[in-house]
Length: 167
Image 1 (cartoon, rainbow, N blue to C red):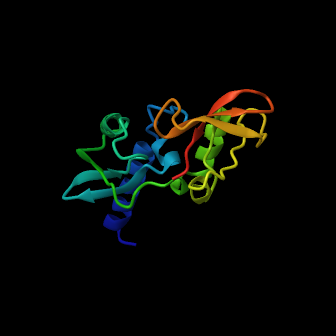
Image 2: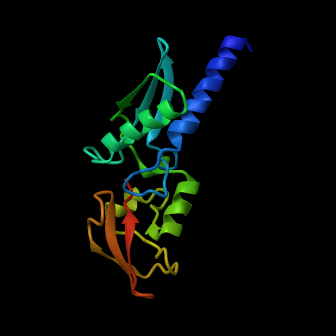
Image 3: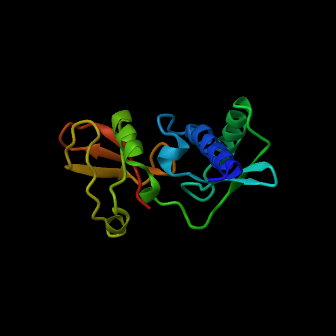
């Protein structure tokens, strides 16, 4: 491998590591890499380009995430940077990492089931309580503390909890 190509790949890897560590302001236990929001890192004409995809169109956290990426890369001595929002393909919970799903559960938010989006369309979702693991749960409201979550309650331990909606 030629030295310039190796250096470019090392730089991309470092940019991905730094940008990917930025946390979601609405769910601070998740990084944007955990969520699958960080889509691409490129170097174009000597400038860094970072592509992010919102979990929901119009997600209010995206401006803060873009700013945090710029700040994190500047602090690491990397830049200049341009953060662009990419809407297509649309984000899906399938892009969320297994580590991210585990972090959600530990934080008290039920993570989306793999492939669960199709069942959700027909009201057939089986959501496990992040507190006790019971699937004897019921949706209380279609929106929780943020638009990407719904409010559920466990019928076993009676605890209410947020569920990160599948889509």
